[in-house]
Amino acid sequence: MRALIIGGEYLDTGVYHNVISPGSGEVIDKVSIANERDIVRRAIDTAYEAFNSFSREPLINRMKILRKAADIMEESKEELARLLALEAGKPIRDARVEVLRAISLFRIAAEEARFVLEGKVHRVDAYEYPPGNENRIVMEVREPIGVVGAILPFNFPINSFAHKVAPNIAAGNTVVVKPASATPISALELASILYKAGLPKGVVSVLPGPASIVGDEIVTNRKVAGITFTGSTYTGLAIASKAISTGKRVMMEMGGSDPIIVLEDADIARAAQIAVRARFEYAGQNCNSGKRIIVHEKIKDKFTEAFLEGVRRLKVGSPLAEDTDMGPVISEEALQNLEGVIKDAIDKGGKLLHGGERLRLKGFYLAPTVIYEPPPTANVLREEVFGPVAPIVGFSRDEEALEIANMTDYGLQAAIFTKDIPRALRIARELKAGGVMINDSTRLRWDALPFGGVKLSGLGGREGVRTTIYNLTEVKMISINIA
Image 1 (cartoon, rainbow, N blue to C red):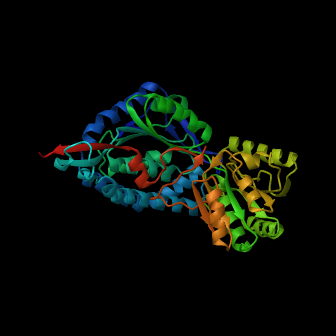
Image 2 (cartoon, rainbow, N blue to C red; image 1 turned 135 degrees about the horizontal axis):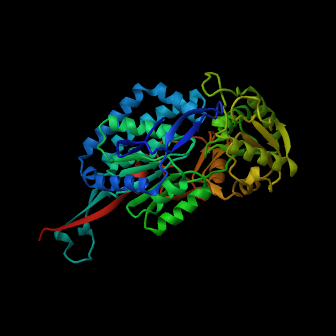
Image 3 (tube, rainbow, N blue to C red; image 1 turned 135 degrees about the vertical axis):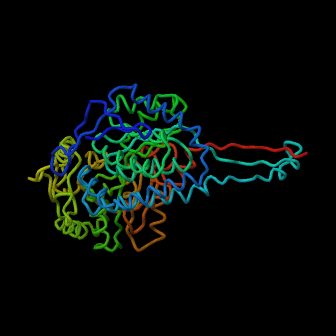
């Protein structure tokens, strides 16, 4: 049993949530949950009180804490990876990558903070108004905003914690974390590591519990100055509307239905190989998975066969097995939703080429599924499908590919495969997406750089170490008259 964490103190509320491993369907642990708003308010009050002293800590001290936490994580990286594989159902090889990314992210936050927070001096003597500028020195500085509420997704519980907590610690904010109900253990473990690394009491709290209590209190409490969220668009928009009504800063990283466009001159084998990985990594449960595959009619059949060959080679099995390529989806509910998406596509005329059924394994497993030419009305082409279902559709003209790619409410990332780079750049310019990868995977992301989308894929600032610090700090202008 694991207790929740309020500012570095452990609290057992006596009410528990069972954590079920998607790979086995069995309970692997239970966590104490914040089952009352007073518990959440206590955590927020603790963070609010800690902010004054923590925000005044010299930056070097905050940097040392982040570096020490990264060192501790590195010493226990295999244990963290196994925990992630058990809790989230992520294949162990991918889990190790996520842990390494999080370690790197803590270190990047420690290094980047000095540049983002260094401020600047403006040459106001270049402006005629207001009079007397020749006698003024004007400085621009950045200051932390206060308490930040961090709401995490299930699919990257370790890396998302790092993205939402490390830059805020670097900036001098305090953080109240609500982990996803399916994956709370990782966040509790990382918060414990931060306190072992010397984080002052009160700075970070982790509150597993229902969204109706924990999430709603964080979003509506006036002592919380900002919200950073990753999750579904439906949830994100509901959170943003409440948060903005109380004057909070918001960073909302929401859903995606990322298109992969394969032009007729593409390297078919390479495009198919990358597309298989982009769609089926972590059973397709990534916001920037390649969720819709749009292929030129001249090569559609050859590409489809190459894609199917790659799908047939996928090893589906236990997340802890070293040779597993694809593990389970997160829950029974997720399985049922995916079955509905598959049925809808087939009922509307799509052809099932592979998979489509549950696998007879202990846990929540769906066979990697390929659906050929579902119609534009099928949900698999219009919604964010969070699972291992790949639709393949054809096009004849670039304008047609763009119409298909842009027809959803989402605009996170996209990929284009071609040898004609000028043509790719013309298409990229017309794609409604926050990132376009040419001859590479939609899954491409640099943790230090801005990440996010347009339309209903993102709202507020982009996520990334520098951009998070920018978005969750305030600019203050200080003018000194030396006359």
